[in-house]
Image (cartoon, rainbow, N blue to C red; front, top):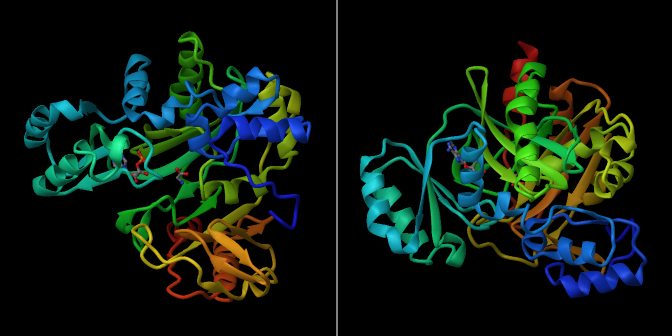
Length: 394
Ligand code: AMP
Ligand code: GLY
């Protein structure tokens, strides 16, 4: 980012500081990326001051920051999702009884924000009870776990569908697929996302039409009808099985690392699209098609998604960017003089972009770039996009 524009350090969750910065630079458009400032009401403050803001209100972003609310909303509006029940801290006994009667595997979710780590898929009753106790006691996620959603485990393959919306009309971006587990072959704990590719062939035109009719449109209509219009990027995480779609989760923002592979495919101007949505008529941006393909491999620090060291020197980024079509997005890095050092769990998003559709070739470029980069304990998945590339060859 430092190469592209001026950096101004503000606390992004502090609405007053963000508003002061927006005034200072006379911002024409403010795009709020992550969920925490949305949940903190930064968009509301900026809108009240008259800025054009891309990003839902605090109360519309609740679709992400309160999973219990989100599940209730889907039930109210007949939006397909896993069966679930919600329990608060005072209902531990009832939650334990519910678990004893449930079939395995079973999914236990902290209702609040937990950086993509608040979900446990328990394969034994013991594991389920442990997750439940840890969350409801506040031990694992603090207040974010004081309410839990216990949910039926859905079989299938996941995909991410993003709709950029003015609250009524919307534009779909290329469907993508994230890789949430830390290890190759979808093993190990869930993370914020270890890699992605787009477009995802599993999301056929038929499935996209279903997503529009059964999920996106009823969601936008439902939010508007509840006086809670949703303006921004609606992230729909879906489970695909037997030609059907069910919602795994809503996010109130673009996804990470899906964004790294979706936005480069957009044929039109991103700023114009976001401005049009924020200003109230997304169709004003004109056609918003996507073409080509892209793959992002996340390089993470050792220990992630658990605790991890910071401050290790990263080498080879420039060499990686010499691979044709490669852009290295920085996620958890910091400049220390001339050196770049690690400063987060997910450190880099090594992304290869191509105008063509041969996913295997794009995967090859992404990994060729990854091999140029080194830092102590770097870990990454070796199979990003592999399943889709197999499908494509067949
Ligand atoms: P979430 O934060 O709700 O997206 O959950 C994180 C990840 O856990 C999802 O991307 C899925 O891989 C998995 N997951 C969540 N809910 C379910 C479910 N009901 N059935 C199967 N997998 C799930
Ligand atoms: N890639 C998942 C997320 O952004 O929540």
